[in-house]
Amino acid sequence: MVLKSRFLVISVCLYALNSIKGLIVERIAILVDVQNVYYTTRETFQKNFDYNVFWRKVTQNREVVYANAYAISSTQEKQRQFHHILRGIGFNVILKPFIQRMDGSTKGDWDVGIAIDAIEIAPEIDTLVLVSGDGDFEVLVNRIREKYGKRVEVYGVEALTALSLANSASQYVPIEGELLL
Picture (tube, rainbow, N blue to C red):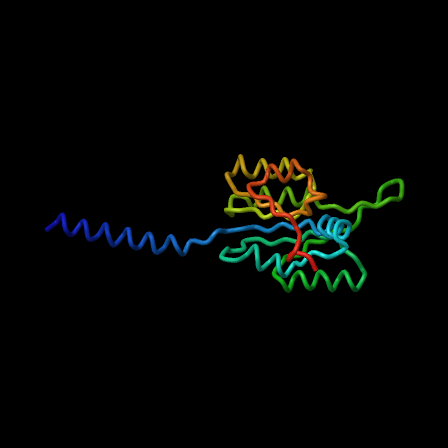
């Protein structure tokens, strides 16, 4: 009788675990290098990246823990509207000004900020989704995979994505077709 009771308890526990297993959702962080995506899609396709289609595709059956779009601040109304659209989709828009160099030229990139955020949030997620073709992120992708044991998906325009970055990712997804407007 005791053996049958234990068997029943074990069976119920296994059933419950299998039921719960189906409820466990992959936790993701999405980090978008807005400048990189804008310029690579424009240069290659003369089109824009479709953030809505991307969001639907990448978040399906997943829990979004972080979704950051890293962009350059602007006083232009069109850019401010774009940032508002990104927020409406679900992104936290993080802005920084152009950097003025001593020679008068300007630079605006978020490589270090994206890398710091990725390292800080890695323990809280299962998968990092990085949208950029910038080869500087190869070291970051390798670190997230090796040190934290996380999956890293990289989305980038194939012709302008560093081969080393694509090869270091758990999965590389080219930006093309339905991901373009």
